Each structure stands twice: as structure tokens, then as C-alpha cells.
Length: 371
Image (cartoon, rainbow, N blue to C red):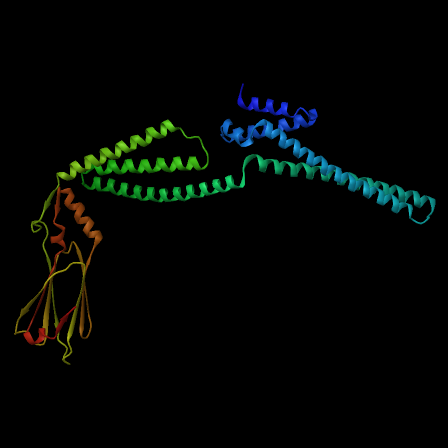
């Protein structure tokens, strides 16, 4: 025998003290509740657990019925009081003509009768509505259970949003790796590992979403997918390490890259004020001072750098010079990808290096302050 059928039979037996009408009404009510919950893909064991034992449900329904009967009795008492009140009031009415008196009595009786019937019908509807609201609230969720469910769903939604954001970034990186592959970077392991990570994160997002909204989850297939994607990631990482181990690191960059030379002369301030030269760079270097007595009243600043790594910028004031050597991350990434196509990685420290040489007479250079 099915569990839901067994529950309804036990419930009907425990309601044997009630009339057949009330008994059928209550059993029909719980049959509808069970069917509605089953349509939401809930397991019958979970539904019956929320409802409680048939004995407890029957006891609760009998108590609710008694309360409803007491409420009906109170309403009937109020109605009887109103009837008596209207009857007494009618007797005190002054004598009128026979025809008008009969008409008024008929009107009052009809009005009183209609009002009483309306009150009774409205009261019945209110009793039924209140009874159903109270019963549903007690059956399915306590306040603590409802709070736990809300907290669980909120945390689940936050986690889902975070994982979706991560997944979108992974998709962008994966697409970039595909374009790099098409451009000539033959490191297939990275593409395979990124594909596995994208699929794994997407699977986790789907499982969390199903868990939040209590949808059916196949544990067997979920484990198969997760283990498969982990194997793909492991294979991709292993292949990447093997391919990267074949790439050579070259310390001599002169066979591919040459330094760009920038030489500019600046006048020394005539008011004997010092000339400030400020360098803004992410790399430490030594400054070379070279004396040339033929240069009077001016100095020369020569900067040698790798243009593929730096953006060069100069700003001159009346008594100060600002020189900026800023690392260009986009160009740097392009250089790195271009090197990978050849199966080489050029020394990063060498490419970041630059030299600064300041030339001028001894007296003029003494007026220069390098910051």
C-alpha cells in the first residue's frame, strides 16, 4: 500500500468520532494538500514528515473544529440578541394606520431576515478562511524552519551570482586562449585545462541552483560529470607542463630586440637656480654622468630603452624636467605571446632595463638635481 493512501486511511480512522460529512471534508483536504506538494516534485516521505503523524493531525483537526463550533455558537448568540432587540423595539413603535403599520412590519421583518442571513453567511466564510490559514501555517513550517529556509536560499543565490561572475571571466580567458592558439601559440594543454574548468564551474552553478529550488538532482550523473571535468583539467595541466618544459629561456635579447635612443638638450636656468630632473619608472637603474666642457649653459639627457616594453614621455618646465618611463602591459603581453610562437622566452629583467646618461660641463652638472 502506498504511503499517502496509508496515511489517509489512518487519518480517517482517527476521525471516527466526527460525522461522516466532517470526516470526508478533512480527508479530502489532506488528499489535496498531498497531491499539490507531489506536483512540486517533493518526495512523499518529506510531505508526510511535514504533516505529522495521523493521530496528531486528527487531534489538531478535532480541536480546530471545536473552536469553530464555539465561534459559531457565539455568532448565533449575537444574532439572537439582535433579533430580540429588534422585536422589543418593534413593540414600542407608536400606533399608526393599519395599512402603513402592516407595510412597515413587513419591511422590517424582511430587512431583519436579510441582514441576519447575510451575517450568518459572512461569518461562515470567515470561519472557513481563518481555519484554513491557521491549519496550513501549523502544518508546513515553523518560524525557525522558515527563517532557515530563507537564509539558505539567500546564501545560495549569493554563491550562485559569485560563481556566475567567475564563470564569465573564465569564458573570456578561454576565448582569449583560443585566439592565441589560432595566432600560433601551440600550447594545447592550457586550452584543454581552461575548457575543463569552465565546464566544472558551470556544473557546480547548475547543482547549487537546483538545490536552492529543490529540484531533482541525479547524484550518479552529477558525480560522473564532476569527475570527468576534473580528469580533463588534470590532463590539460599535465600537457601544459610538458609543452612549457620545451620552451627555452634566452638571456641575450640582442638577436631580436634593440634599444631605442632618445637624446634631448636642456638649457640651464640663468638665475643660478638648480635644474630638477625627475624620473618616474618601475625599474631601478644607475645614472651615468659624462663631462663635456664644450657644452656651456646646457646639458644633454640620453635615455636608452626597449620600446616594446615602455611608453616614453617628457614634460619640461622653467626649472624642472619630468621624464616618464611607463611599462605598457598590453605591449608586454604581445611581446610574450610573440616569443611563445618561436618557442622562446626572452629575459624579462633585460627587457625592463634602461640606461640614462647626462652630459654637460662640470659647473652645469653641479646645478642638476636628479630625483
